[in-house]
Length: 385
Image 1 (cartoon, helix red, strand yellow):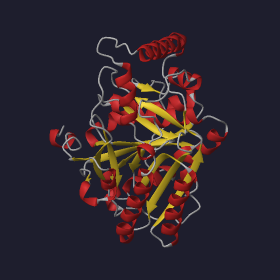
Image 2 (cartoon, helix red, strand yellow):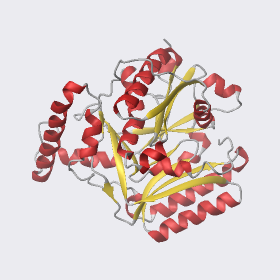
Image 3 (tube, helix red, strand yellow):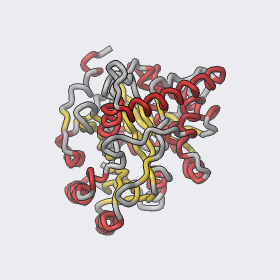
């Protein structure tokens, strides 16, 4: 085991202004002996049309939970994409990650009736394809930082997986360890106007300066909205039962445990709501501080071989963003997909409610990134940087 390699991600400097996601100086290439664990849901658009996006989101986030739990909650970089996810890790953890991916693929098919693709792609193969994976750390809050990815290699790895390369079969009955995975929050309604999920990808290294300017321009537009277009209220999401979310969450347990776990989750939500309303802490657990941390620790905007945002904006600001994107696509700077809906969803990964570094993945409630990505499929495909 190489301790220096293991500590690579933790040693990266953290930047705090989101505009820095398009600045190559904030990124460092992943070590040569790392691999990418990648996954996505086959037919996610159909599942979304059937009203099953909560389950699709749960499946996507389960990949992160299963892999990180298998590695002992190590701080490795990852990205959540709505109907899929990616985790980067040292190759000496590849077998543990392979087992976790096989287990989560089998679980998604068995319990969620979702066909999941999973793969492990070596960084060395990506570089032989003349692409790269570089990573940066963006502080969503003083408590949590998220990984940002550039170089085109992550997108290449996803395409290879979809083409049937590097595939991991679901030949296991062993359940994945999804400890800490939660999707009990109710959908969050738009308060500025509507929830807009955006994916914008640069077309080539030659257009990166213009693409960086585009990212800055979009950020400036969202900055004019309350909380920079953040879809989660500052005081946190509403504390209420999400029946679909609780049902999806209990599927992470053995069948004989599900009724008990469902009752436990409902009691926890009810108790938390009561303590929140009365502003009464329970030992070291302060419910109002926790819900504020939920909002602060959310990944509503990110960079994963391109800009991804789920923002709450009014119509004039949405139209300005769409105009910027359309003009950039027309001039060959980017290609983009955008999807509008009236709510946002949150799926969480909470190692311990007593610590404040819990992570919360935000997506649009009506298809979000999955539908936005589908609108990219008919456009000219290139290897983004």
